[in-house]
Length: 254
Image (tube, rainbow, N blue to C red; front, side, top):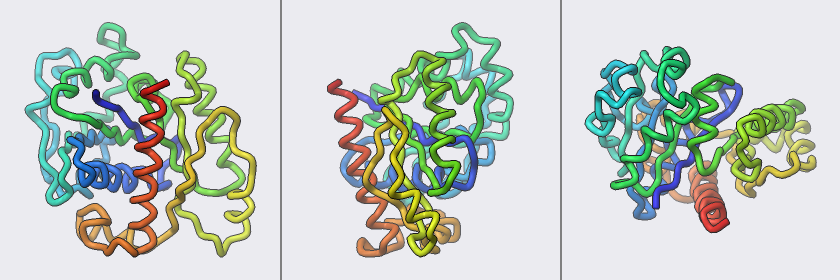
């Protein structure tokens, strides 16, 4: 059985892509066959995975099934997982999605053939409320939301939950965790103690603010490929993966 895990947020700069890449590596290290699909036209997940290729096929071709997506899959440089690279044409997906049958489920349809080979697909989605975001919410088994502690954190989750409800998607599919946490800051400590949004699973793991995560861009590798297991951020991603794996199992069994 293949699980679909989507990393999503309404704003950028929250550690979404670094989390997607590190979870892909952690899942692969646990023996899963993993595909990371970079849906963001900026291509940060592709870059951090050490992949130089782009998905150069015209989006309208693979959206309509005229070009098999599997042929564009690349292997990460050292992370042990596969990557479906980004393309600048992804910026046009919102327009193109309106031109296919059942546009809100186009992504779900495209993902089905990958279930023959992969146990986990991770979607790195661009930050927006859009037709593509609707597709990501519907196609995912778990919508994983990184949240920076702050006064607007809960409002962000409420907006996503409202959109999920509009799409008739259960709130239990949503799982949130705190990222870029700096416990020296009062506002971060206060937010960590605040009551979470009702109905959303809040994972116990939190990712600290750490320069080691920024160095992923220098190495173009997941953190675990160049950092020791005791390094705080690396250990935090390992713990987060175990939380996510348990959450996927709970959702699978109902």
